[in-house]
Length: 279
Image (cartoon, rainbow, N blue to C red; front, top):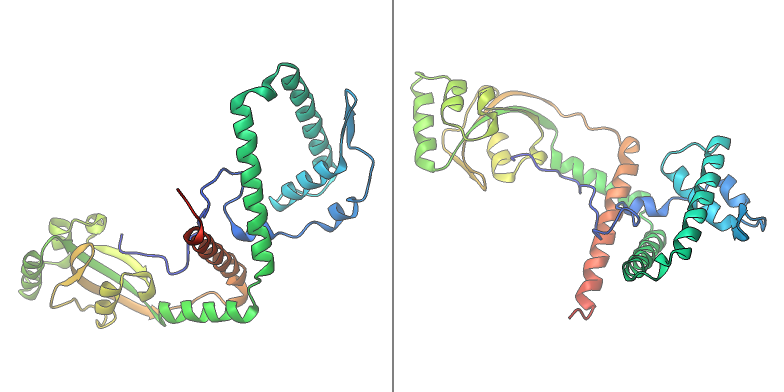
């Protein structure tokens, strides 16, 4: 793939189960005001066979559901209550059957505890290391500069060696063959079927060697010498050029915040691993 992403992709830095969450930004979601207001209630959600289900379990579960996008209404509240009751009934039955003593179950509980503690650490770390508006704007400006002010509709022919690329350029120079036909005949890239067409791309979204050569071309021009990248040897043609329109800062700053939080957390984990004694 020639295209690469400028900003960090959404990465799951721990590689744990879904219970831990994979987005550092999600771990910092603020409790819903309505949920928090009930936190002091001592009345249990329900009492199942003499066992009380505390409000604290309901509150945490409701917070999670609201953060996931579920509506904060009576239907959700009723569904959560039913879910907790059903879980308690099943858990009591499992205990009667001795399943709580099963070694595999103990291992799962230990793993769950580790995962929850890891999640708590990540949430606290992000909370205590807030990303400022200035940092967000600086990152936006950095990405904007990397992307450039223009975007290019570009085609290419990708081959394995320089000699083959030079041969293709010679055929183009002779005017005896069309670029599209040569791409279909010689290119090993998936774009060959489309006559070598990659489509519209900003320089910052392409590997450097490719983009450096591309921006030197005018509309309709192709490279007179082969361009080497990690993928092979390219003959590049610029089909069109237009101004690049990036979304305004306010539209993408939340996405940038999430990406920067992930990178921050990833670095912290890397640093902690470097100082940890792992045998």
